[in-house]
Length: 281
Ligand code: SAM
Image 1 (cartoon, rainbow, N blue to C red):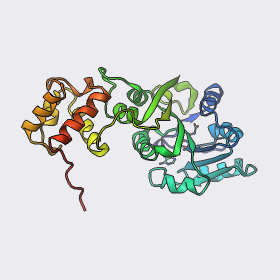
Image 2: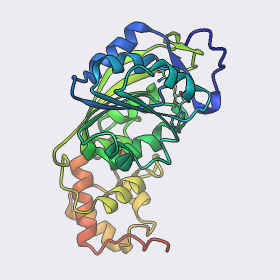
Image 3: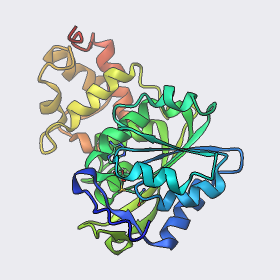
Image 4: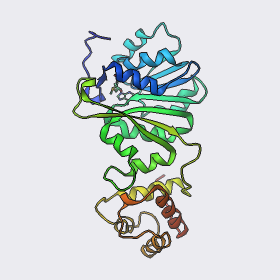
């Protein structure tokens, strides 16, 4: 869509990928076979879409920008395997939408709009059973967090919640010059392969998420200071006992706990009577 006269909208995170070698490497990572189904989020001007359309048995692409949708539909009009949906990926019922175009499993490919990458990641996490593989381009800082192990400043809520359910691999660093307009930051391509079972048994996943979020809520404070506030439904003494029974020093910081330790702590707090506050009606 060269010379289409459409200016990139910053508010929609529009940095279009123009580097052919990066595009073909992403397509190779998706590696959709003839019979496979692929969801693309934010096809933009269709650069990655063209590569994916060559491979996939079914390609459903969701684009929010109503200026780009007619151009995309025009570009792929002669390919009945490609469907362009105009919509907001954050509003769409992904499960129900994909069910209209084929049975699972699906793959996901996206150069995500960076301003909404975290909420999109959480939506994909919630429907992970639909997918065999996700290949996502993210702002490097977010990608580093997703792939980080315990002990460093990148390790946080995203690392723990995603590594519980996916093998996360950092595949490719992409420099700003590969995009138009040129972004201010580096990007990375990550692949996510959903695990058949969570990596560890966490007892109750909603409660686990709460424990993890509370543990990272004040990064410079100790675990004890982060957890004692009452949000976990366990009295202060119970938290101290649970930490001791799990063999986790209350003076440690959340960023030092492994996934296994977070699971142990969650179960320890549940055993101490931990509950989530009732949801607002
Ligand atoms: N895939 C294209 C490429 O690589 O050149 C475009 C990537 S650009 C970083 C992100 C795309 O996502 C833009 O086309 C933008 O309009 C679209 N987008 C932004 N917010 C969206 C949303 N909530 N739902 C669906 N698409 C969205």
